[in-house]
Image 1 (cartoon, one colour):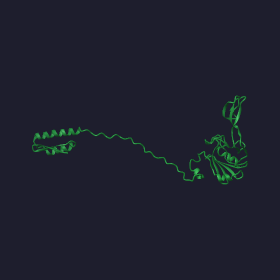
Image 2: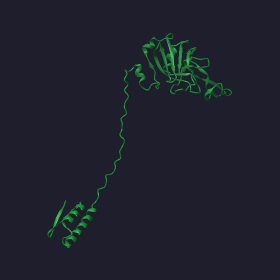
Image 3: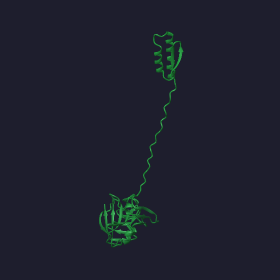
Length: 254
Protein backbone atom coordinates (compact mmCIF):
# COMPACT_ATOMS: atom_id res chain seq x y z
CA UNK A 1 0.00 0.00 0.00
CA UNK A 2 1.28 3.51 -0.84
CA UNK A 3 1.09 6.55 1.49
CA UNK A 4 1.74 10.11 0.38
CA UNK A 5 3.10 13.09 2.30
CA UNK A 6 3.02 16.62 0.93
CA UNK A 7 6.43 18.29 0.39
CA UNK A 8 5.64 21.48 -1.34
CA UNK A 9 4.31 20.41 -4.71
CA UNK A 10 5.61 16.85 -4.60
CA UNK A 11 4.13 13.71 -3.07
CA UNK A 12 6.51 11.15 -1.54
CA UNK A 13 5.31 7.54 -1.52
CA UNK A 14 6.06 5.17 1.36
CA UNK A 15 5.60 1.40 1.72
CA UNK A 16 6.29 -1.35 4.22
CA UNK A 17 6.84 -4.35 2.01
CA UNK A 18 7.32 -3.33 -1.61
CA UNK A 19 10.62 -1.46 -1.76
CA UNK A 20 11.11 -1.89 -5.49
CA UNK A 21 7.72 -0.41 -6.33
CA UNK A 22 8.23 2.49 -3.91
CA UNK A 23 11.66 3.26 -5.26
CA UNK A 24 10.45 3.21 -8.84
CA UNK A 25 7.59 5.51 -7.94
CA UNK A 26 9.98 7.95 -6.26
CA UNK A 27 12.09 7.99 -9.41
CA UNK A 28 9.03 8.67 -11.50
CA UNK A 29 7.71 11.41 -9.21
CA UNK A 30 11.10 13.08 -8.66
CA UNK A 31 12.89 13.45 -11.98
CA UNK A 32 16.52 14.49 -12.20
CA UNK A 33 15.46 18.05 -13.01
CA UNK A 34 13.60 18.44 -9.63
CA UNK A 35 14.81 20.67 -6.86
CA UNK A 36 18.17 19.27 -5.58
CA UNK A 37 17.02 19.31 -1.95
CA UNK A 38 13.87 17.41 -2.75
CA UNK A 39 15.83 14.93 -4.83
CA UNK A 40 18.25 14.31 -1.96
CA UNK A 41 15.32 13.92 0.43
CA UNK A 42 13.70 11.38 -1.88
CA UNK A 43 16.93 9.41 -2.14
CA UNK A 44 17.22 9.40 1.64
CA UNK A 45 13.67 8.14 2.05
CA UNK A 46 14.24 5.47 -0.59
CA UNK A 47 17.28 4.15 1.30
CA UNK A 48 15.31 4.08 4.54
CA UNK A 49 12.44 2.26 2.85
CA UNK A 50 14.75 -0.35 1.30
CA UNK A 51 16.57 -0.90 4.58
CA UNK A 52 13.42 -1.18 6.65
CA UNK A 53 11.78 -3.53 4.19
CA UNK A 54 14.81 -5.83 4.18
CA UNK A 55 14.80 -6.00 7.99
CA UNK A 56 11.25 -7.27 8.24
CA UNK A 57 11.03 -10.64 10.03
CA UNK A 58 10.94 -13.59 7.62
CA UNK A 59 8.47 -16.41 8.14
CA UNK A 60 10.11 -19.73 9.05
CA UNK A 61 9.39 -22.77 6.87
CA UNK A 62 6.95 -25.23 8.36
CA UNK A 63 8.67 -28.21 10.00
CA UNK A 64 8.67 -31.40 7.97
CA UNK A 65 6.20 -34.00 9.15
CA UNK A 66 7.45 -37.56 9.07
CA UNK A 67 5.30 -39.64 6.77
CA UNK A 68 4.36 -43.03 8.13
CA UNK A 69 3.84 -45.88 5.69
CA UNK A 70 0.23 -46.70 5.07
CA UNK A 71 -1.03 -49.76 6.93
CA UNK A 72 -2.46 -52.37 4.60
CA UNK A 73 -5.09 -54.59 6.15
CA UNK A 74 -4.29 -58.29 5.82
CA UNK A 75 -6.90 -60.10 3.81
CA UNK A 76 -8.61 -62.88 5.72
CA UNK A 77 -8.84 -66.20 3.90
CA UNK A 78 -12.37 -67.37 3.31
CA UNK A 79 -12.67 -71.04 2.39
CA UNK A 80 -15.05 -71.17 -0.59
CA UNK A 81 -15.97 -74.84 -0.16
CA UNK A 82 -18.60 -76.37 2.14
CA UNK A 83 -17.27 -77.36 5.56
CA UNK A 84 -16.50 -81.05 5.92
CA UNK A 85 -15.85 -81.65 2.24
CA UNK A 86 -12.53 -82.87 0.88
CA UNK A 87 -12.18 -79.68 -1.17
CA UNK A 88 -12.63 -77.62 1.99
CA UNK A 89 -9.91 -79.64 3.74
CA UNK A 90 -7.44 -79.22 0.88
CA UNK A 91 -8.09 -75.51 0.33
CA UNK A 92 -6.19 -74.36 3.40
CA UNK A 93 -2.63 -75.18 4.53
CA UNK A 94 -2.43 -78.29 2.42
CA UNK A 95 -0.43 -80.50 2.15
CA UNK A 96 1.49 -79.09 5.13
CA UNK A 97 -1.24 -79.64 7.67
CA UNK A 98 -0.87 -82.48 10.17
CA UNK A 99 -4.65 -82.89 10.32
CA UNK A 100 -6.46 -85.95 9.00
CA UNK A 101 -9.47 -85.92 6.71
CA UNK A 102 -11.94 -88.79 6.80
CA UNK A 103 -14.83 -89.72 4.55
CA UNK A 104 -16.87 -91.41 7.25
CA UNK A 105 -19.44 -92.95 4.94
CA UNK A 106 -16.72 -94.46 2.73
CA UNK A 107 -14.71 -95.64 5.75
CA UNK A 108 -17.77 -97.51 6.92
CA UNK A 109 -17.66 -99.50 3.67
CA UNK A 110 -13.89 -100.05 3.78
CA UNK A 111 -12.48 -103.41 4.79
CA UNK A 112 -9.29 -105.37 4.30
CA UNK A 113 -10.54 -106.83 1.03
CA UNK A 114 -11.35 -103.59 -0.84
CA UNK A 115 -8.68 -101.11 0.26
CA UNK A 116 -5.25 -100.03 -0.88
CA UNK A 117 -2.74 -97.46 0.37
CA UNK A 118 -1.01 -94.64 -1.50
CA UNK A 119 1.97 -92.70 -0.14
CA UNK A 120 2.99 -89.38 -1.73
CA UNK A 121 6.58 -88.59 -0.71
CA UNK A 122 6.58 -85.08 -2.22
CA UNK A 123 3.47 -84.01 -0.32
CA UNK A 124 4.21 -86.18 2.73
CA UNK A 125 0.65 -87.50 2.68
CA UNK A 126 -0.84 -90.95 2.97
CA UNK A 127 -4.18 -92.09 1.51
CA UNK A 128 -6.37 -95.00 2.41
CA UNK A 129 -8.28 -95.74 -0.76
CA UNK A 130 -11.48 -97.62 -1.52
CA UNK A 131 -11.32 -98.20 -5.23
CA UNK A 132 -10.33 -94.80 -6.69
CA UNK A 133 -11.91 -92.80 -3.86
CA UNK A 134 -10.07 -91.31 -0.88
CA UNK A 135 -11.46 -92.67 2.36
CA UNK A 136 -8.78 -91.01 4.52
CA UNK A 137 -6.01 -88.46 3.87
CA UNK A 138 -3.36 -88.22 6.59
CA UNK A 139 0.13 -86.86 7.28
CA UNK A 140 3.24 -89.04 6.99
CA UNK A 141 6.99 -88.54 7.40
CA UNK A 142 9.27 -90.53 5.13
CA UNK A 143 13.04 -91.15 5.08
CA UNK A 144 15.69 -88.46 5.30
CA UNK A 145 16.64 -87.40 1.82
CA UNK A 146 20.02 -88.50 0.43
CA UNK A 147 20.66 -90.53 3.57
CA UNK A 148 17.70 -92.81 4.34
CA UNK A 149 15.49 -92.40 1.29
CA UNK A 150 12.20 -94.28 1.38
CA UNK A 151 12.07 -96.64 -1.62
CA UNK A 152 9.40 -95.94 -4.23
CA UNK A 153 7.33 -98.37 -6.27
CA UNK A 154 4.62 -100.97 -5.78
CA UNK A 155 4.67 -103.06 -2.59
CA UNK A 156 2.46 -105.39 -0.62
CA UNK A 157 2.09 -105.63 3.13
CA UNK A 158 3.96 -108.78 4.16
CA UNK A 159 3.71 -108.55 7.96
CA UNK A 160 1.45 -106.88 10.50
CA UNK A 161 2.39 -106.50 14.18
CA UNK A 162 0.45 -104.11 16.39
CA UNK A 163 3.09 -103.77 19.12
CA UNK A 164 6.55 -103.95 17.61
CA UNK A 165 9.96 -102.49 18.41
CA UNK A 166 12.81 -101.84 16.00
CA UNK A 167 15.78 -104.22 16.11
CA UNK A 168 18.00 -101.60 14.42
CA UNK A 169 17.29 -98.21 15.99
CA UNK A 170 16.61 -97.30 19.60
CA UNK A 171 18.37 -96.43 22.86
CA UNK A 172 21.21 -97.96 24.88
CA UNK A 173 21.11 -98.27 28.68
CA UNK A 174 23.91 -99.08 31.12
CA UNK A 175 23.81 -101.67 33.90
CA UNK A 176 22.21 -99.18 36.29
CA UNK A 177 19.35 -98.60 33.86
CA UNK A 178 20.43 -95.08 32.83
CA UNK A 179 20.13 -94.18 29.17
CA UNK A 180 23.60 -93.57 27.75
CA UNK A 181 22.75 -93.12 24.06
CA UNK A 182 19.62 -92.13 22.16
CA UNK A 183 19.06 -92.80 18.45
CA UNK A 184 21.49 -95.68 18.65
CA UNK A 185 22.17 -98.09 15.81
CA UNK A 186 22.44 -101.67 17.08
CA UNK A 187 24.81 -102.53 14.22
CA UNK A 188 27.33 -99.84 15.16
CA UNK A 189 26.91 -98.80 18.79
CA UNK A 190 28.17 -101.04 21.61
CA UNK A 191 26.15 -101.89 24.68
CA UNK A 192 28.15 -101.54 27.96
CA UNK A 193 28.56 -104.64 30.18
CA UNK A 194 25.30 -105.34 31.97
CA UNK A 195 23.46 -102.84 29.79
CA UNK A 196 20.89 -103.33 27.05
CA UNK A 197 19.65 -102.09 23.72
CA UNK A 198 15.96 -101.17 23.55
CA UNK A 199 14.44 -100.73 20.12
CA UNK A 200 12.31 -97.73 19.26
CA UNK A 201 8.55 -98.41 19.37
CA UNK A 202 6.97 -99.05 15.97
CA UNK A 203 3.30 -99.51 16.82
CA UNK A 204 0.91 -100.70 14.10
CA UNK A 205 3.79 -102.11 12.09
CA UNK A 206 3.08 -103.02 8.45
CA UNK A 207 6.15 -104.39 6.69
CA UNK A 208 6.83 -103.55 3.02
CA UNK A 209 10.37 -104.83 2.39
CA UNK A 210 12.65 -107.56 3.73
CA UNK A 211 15.28 -105.03 4.82
CA UNK A 212 13.11 -103.33 7.41
CA UNK A 213 11.03 -100.73 5.60
CA UNK A 214 7.39 -100.46 6.61
CA UNK A 215 4.57 -98.22 7.81
CA UNK A 216 4.04 -97.55 11.52
CA UNK A 217 2.97 -94.97 14.07
CA UNK A 218 5.49 -92.15 14.54
CA UNK A 219 6.20 -88.46 14.89
CA UNK A 220 5.13 -86.66 11.71
CA UNK A 221 5.70 -83.05 12.76
CA UNK A 222 8.90 -82.95 10.71
CA UNK A 223 9.04 -83.86 7.03
CA UNK A 224 11.52 -86.48 5.77
CA UNK A 225 12.65 -87.44 9.27
CA UNK A 226 12.73 -91.25 9.44
CA UNK A 227 15.39 -93.88 8.77
CA UNK A 228 13.43 -94.96 5.69
CA UNK A 229 10.15 -96.14 7.15
CA UNK A 230 6.84 -94.38 6.58
CA UNK A 231 5.84 -92.80 9.86
CA UNK A 232 2.08 -92.33 9.97
CA UNK A 233 -0.06 -89.96 12.03
CA UNK A 234 -1.13 -91.42 15.38
CA UNK A 235 -4.77 -90.56 14.69
CA UNK A 236 -4.85 -92.34 11.32
CA UNK A 237 -2.58 -95.36 11.52
CA UNK A 238 -4.88 -97.51 13.72
CA UNK A 239 -7.55 -97.19 11.02
CA UNK A 240 -5.07 -98.05 8.25
CA UNK A 241 -3.94 -101.07 10.28
CA UNK A 242 -7.54 -102.22 10.84
CA UNK A 243 -8.65 -101.72 7.21
CA UNK A 244 -5.74 -103.57 5.54
CA UNK A 245 -4.32 -107.09 5.59
CA UNK A 246 -1.22 -109.02 4.54
CA UNK A 247 -1.25 -108.72 0.77
CA UNK A 248 -2.80 -105.22 0.59
CA UNK A 249 -1.20 -103.10 -2.16
CA UNK A 250 0.84 -100.07 -1.12
CA UNK A 251 1.96 -97.61 -3.83
CA UNK A 252 4.80 -95.27 -2.85
CA UNK A 253 5.15 -92.34 -5.25
CA UNK A 254 8.08 -89.88 -5.43
